[in-house]
Figure 1 (cartoon, rainbow, N blue to C red):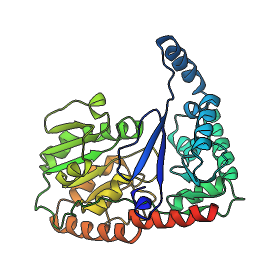
Figure 2: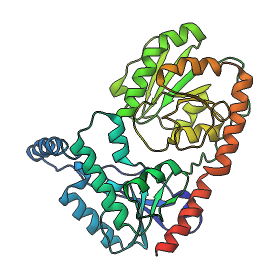
Figure 3: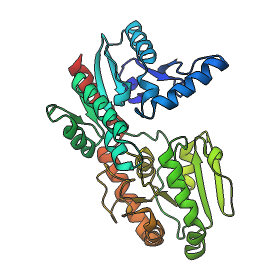
Length: 348
């Protein structure tokens, strides 16, 4: 959004229930999701819990919310609307683009804990959105392939790699001789991140003992709601500057075993020169090679072995240099903004 603003585009963020992060270059507007009043809120929670048994995205698909979203967009009358996620899609009078941050039906089917009804509802939701949108964009070729499996008739689906800007934050130019601090960052109101952090916490005593690493940091939104400090473990919740945390890490660890989409935290680490050890699932969609851009392990159980591979500072220096070049070539915010502006102009 900042990249588009820098190109002279007036940008606004329309979000549900919580305001967007403040910016000098774009505006933010929020639509309330939860009803006010104790009795109404209790009834709403009960009905939502029941609806989610059949539709994982019932919160966003309620007729009341969709109508309010549609009316708000029509009142604003933007030249183009970029819908982030298929569950946000509503018909509007404005030109529009659907950005598939994740192919949710594939994630639900892979997770193994969702019912066939929930998976089919998600597939139907995604098919409707992709077929209705003038243009659909995915953030990786992998997700484009998954989207085409859902809607093979829409061969015009495009891929625009996710762009990340780290602003004026300096890239780390060299790695310390010994790994002292590792960490995992993310939004811990997202269940796959909680699951991954719990795995890392279970592995921590062995990692600390066998590899001599002194500190594990878990940082991000709502971290303190799920975890407590332990020997060698720091919990940092709702930190004001995640890049400062990333710069403290000798290695970013991403032990994800569920979830989907492209991991912004890994692209940020690439940009900042922080070496990454990740599961194959965690780094999917980034076209990263094991041993070149990151240490990639087949499963979360192999994370300690991956950390052992990254113990040598020369290995980490090579990873850092190659990963930063990988970010510059395909994952900068400026290149994404320019490509998306071309698509917006096309649909307008």
